[in-house]
Image (tube, rainbow, N blue to C red; front, side):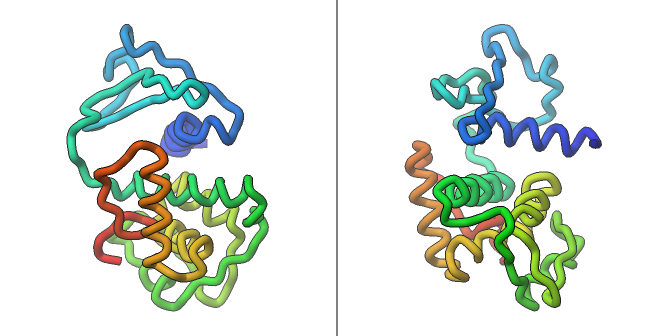
Length: 178
């Protein structure tokens, strides 16, 4: 597994540790960006059990949140799976528009084809590991029954549950363009 995959998986484990039954410990008082090897404008690590902030950098700075929107989408998919409303093997169809978008190399994407179906797990992995915008959009369509307005409302609700009240959410991948 390459470093990008490991880093993204590690980040997801921190965010979703409650679901995965994992815990990550970082001592915020003695850990610097340099020690963590972070090259990020902003970062946060939270203990999934106690919700204690273990590490924080520029947490009050307003930044674009496209990839965070994808993580929120993945989090909502995990909630659907854990509540048995969705299954890893459920099939997801890809529209022609979504196929065309997934082939646009301007954005982080994994090519998708409208002539085949993908499992929730395949799209989940593409969205989480490769930050694939098309895969996140397909998952958003799946959990909202292809209703983008409903999806954004669901995302705002979930963000509020997390204490996030000032996010600007556009869709499952966070790109204004889509």
